[in-house]
Image 1 (cartoon, rainbow, N blue to C red):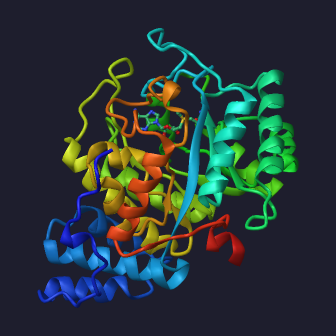
Image 2: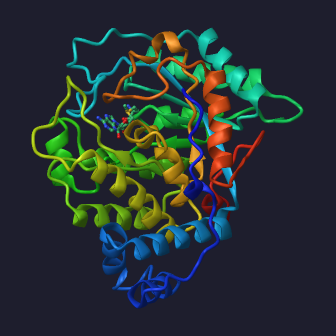
Length: 385
Ligand code: SAM
C-alpha cells in the first residue's frame, strides 16, 4: 500500500452552518427529533439523495457531531482473519460461493490463526474478527470453538486481561452452535441480512437460502447475549433508494449494536444479472448510508468497510468522515489472501499486516481521529441497552 494521500478536506472540520437557506433549514431538521416520527422516511431519502454540496456537508457535519457526542472520537480496530474460503452456500454475488470452481480452497491451521491473533494483541488491536465461508459440520463447529479458546488463552496480558475481543462472522448456525461459541468466549456476531427486502434477497440467493432464517439467527444471537451486527450491500441490481431506506428502518427496529455495510462490487465469476449504478454512485451511496445510519441510530458501531476502500483509495477515510468508527485491518496471511476474493479489486492483497497497520494509523490521523488501543471497543449502544 502506498502512503495515504493527505488531502486537506480529510481533516475534521468544525461544523459550520450552511449558508444557503435550504441547506441551513436541512441542518436544523437533522438536529431535531425526526427519528421515530412519520417524517423519518422523508429525511432519510433526502440524506441519501441530495446532490447539493451544502446539504451534503450538512449531512456529513451532523453525522460527525452525532458520532463524537455519542461514541467519542476513537476508531476501533478489529484485525480481520479470513480463516477459510470453503463455503457450502451459493450466494450469487460472492466470489467464494460453492459453485465457483475457479477458486483454490484453503483453511488456516489453528497455529496460523493464533499467530495472527498474537500479532493483533501485540499491536494493541483490541479485537479481531474471525470470518470464513459458511460450513455447519461438526468438525467446523469444533474448529471455531478451539480457535476462540486458543485466541483467548494466547492474548491475555496486563494490557488486555480478558484477551482480545472476538467477533464472529461465520454465517447461519444452530442455536446450540451459537451458544457453544459464546460460552467459549466470542461476544459479537456479524450476520448481514444483505437486504431487508425478502424479494430482493430471493433474487440474490438460491431458494434454500432464506431471508427469514437470517432474521431468526439474528434474534437467536441477541437472545444468547451476543452484540449483534448486520448490514446490507449497496447498489445491487434491482435495489432502489426506497429499499435502502427500508434497510435503515430495519436496523432501527431490530435495535442492532453494529453495522457493516458496503457497496456491491461484481466478481468476474459471480456477476449478478441486471444493471447496477456506476462505481462512483455506489461509493457515494455507501458513504451516505453510513451517515444516515449514524444519524438514525446514533450510538452503534459502524464499520468503514474494505469494500469502500476497494472503490476509492480514500474510501475508508470517507466512511470515517461520514460517521463510521470501526476499521477492520487485514491480518490474514498474505499467502492465502488472494483466495478470499469476494469481489474484484480487493485492496491490501500483497501488504503484510505490519504495512497495513502503519498505513492505517496515518489514515485515521488524517481525518483527525484517534486509534483506540488495547480495548475491545464495544458498541456504546450495547452498553446502554
Ligand atoms: N459466510 C459468512 C456470512 O455470510 O455472514 C461470512 C462471509 S461473507 C463472504 C461476508 C459478506 O461479504 C457477505 O455478508 C456479503 O455482504 C459480502 N460480499 C460477498 N460478495 C460481495 C460482493 N460481490 N460485493 C460486496 N460485498 C460482498
